[in-house]
Amino acid sequence: MRVLVTGSTQGIGLAMASAFVKEGHEVIVHCSSDMEKAQRVAREIGAYAAVTADFSKIDEVKGLYEKTGAVDCLILNASVQYKEKWDEITEETFDRQINVNLKSTLFLMQAYAPAMRERGFGRIVTVGSVNQYRRHPELPMYSATKCAVFSLVQNAAKQLAPYGVTVNNIAPGAIATPRNADVYNDDEKRKGVERVIPMGRFGRPEDCVGTVLMLCSEAGAYITGTDIVMDGGMRL
Ligand SMILES: NC(=O)c1ccc[n+]([C@@H]2O[C@H](COP(=O)([O-])OP(=O)(O)OC[C@H]3O[C@@H](n4cnc5c(N)ncnc54)[C@H](OP(=O)(O)O)[C@@H]3O)[C@@H](O)[C@H]2O)c1
Image 1 (cartoon, rainbow, N blue to C red):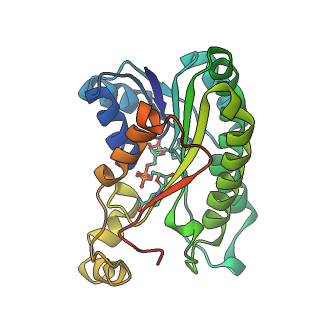
Image 2 (cartoon, rainbow, N blue to C red):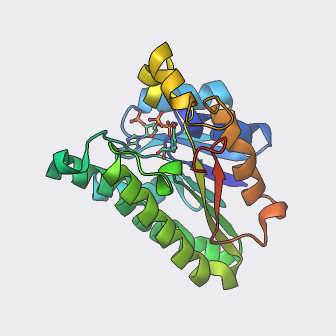
């Protein structure tokens, strides 16, 4: 199968892209603008191609399909996150999180779903967050975008179900990636996060991989419009 994993030059997206390659799929690596980085990562993991598109710019979102062509599996993993209390959010960070996390999700689904529908097969997986369920005082907008994405996922899932196209969301908890390296690498901060995770540890990017592979495989054929959480119990 041909698989596009957005935001796959590092962290969770990279783990997913590598796993799809290992399973024998043609994977397209993506990041916002650094083509050299995307190509280097693609080479290192044996991916099929590399592309860039900055999801804060709607023209680049809408232009991505032209660069990749149709895919069987669309893994919408790229996002941005700004840590701000609700009364400190600026219009700039509001717009950026809405555009990169939510607006791009809708328009990428619009771009990629028609070919899936025509062929009678497709898998779309969005990457949400435990913050859909757990209110973090510094992540109100980020959480709002992830909740809104899941609402879109459920709606699209219902419309696309008759055509063999499934649409699901996964919701990781605290995962050790470059995004939160400052917390993970600081003993005190890391322990503070680990105290609210019943399993007592950060997740690894690899902890998010099996579910996505399953959703895109025959085992996931009858699963649509759902959310699967991998958070070591953090939302409980
Ligand atoms: N890490 C966690 O603890 C955690 C927890 C819950 C959910 N998640 C979700 O899991 C996903 C991956 O997280 P991560 O921690 O692996 O992220 P990460 O380390 O921050 O990597 C983000 C990826 O998204 C790309 N990206 C960022 N801004 C973009 C833009 N404007 N346009 C296009 N691509 C852009 C980045 O490419 P560039 O380098 O080019 O910017 C990078 O490849 C995200 O959706 C995140 O919200 C993560």
